[in-house]
Image 1 (tube, helix red, strand yellow):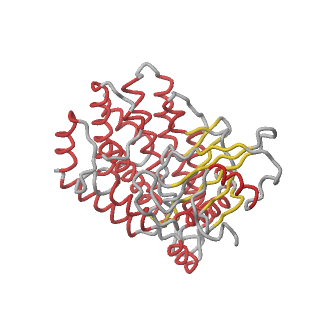
Image 2 (cartoon, helix red, strand yellow):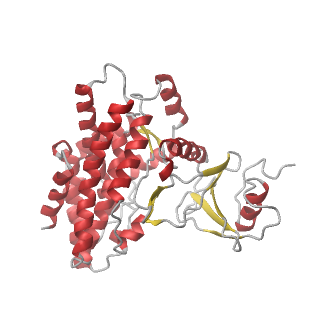
Length: 400
């Protein structure tokens, strides 16, 4: 009986065997080494390599239980991830790891090892700059988002894709952690430092006008099946080196508003800016670069989506007047979702190292407040931002 006819969680030794017997990436007689490198809560990630040749492979396997709590988890998200990697790999092959094999029974994706690229969040924390980052991020977003809408994709195929990529468990996580609990702590999971509890009460929990705007963004997230989005496109899902970027971990993928992916990217860049401003303010080179990168990412993206629209959207009704409104809504959504990302990482229980690594309370308090204020501004004034400089100048006023 085939040992792989039923799902089981592999260990390091089993992953080495699997890479030979099932993936057939290595020869049966090759001597391999392996380690488990997953640092998330949903998947196990095995790196397998031949130390003599340097040939290597990544196997990402989903389990039926969350790693941290042991809570049951529907493992179909693994198939969703494999499918979006295939689609994005066709649309933007430069930016996606090559997928060699997908095993639906074992919920295992075998893919290219991108170890030569480094975690963008950690690189930025270390003060590393990448002159190509705005160019690369804007190209990836333009190339993967608009072409998956039904402005481009056949209507029937788009509806089939919406069904195929229904990702209710992982969307449920986002609906709570991003759009509900930071403003209505009904599960008592928010983690807020004592010095900012009153600030959060006043500016988030008791801010009814803000909550209404978040409600609009939440409703759109849940109901606007606009584009096939990554769904969790933070700077820890982006890897970079001097040659470019790679985008990984799209297990939260579903059909939603494209501004959610764009906003997540932009919001996470602000964490790097805020961290350096409050902890390393003399590092003017990095501060100038991150400000410029955020502004350029927005401006380049607007321009690239506009050009992409002209080249791939052909339906008569979607004329220049429709296009103008469509792009305006994408930008407004992007600003709003950047705001919700910034706020939820400050007050929620899924934080980022740009905040948690700051131990000096005299730095931590104003850092968190600045991010919350900027998040609120992006949500409430999202239609007033027309270009990158509108965005960066607002944050500079908050930091002043």
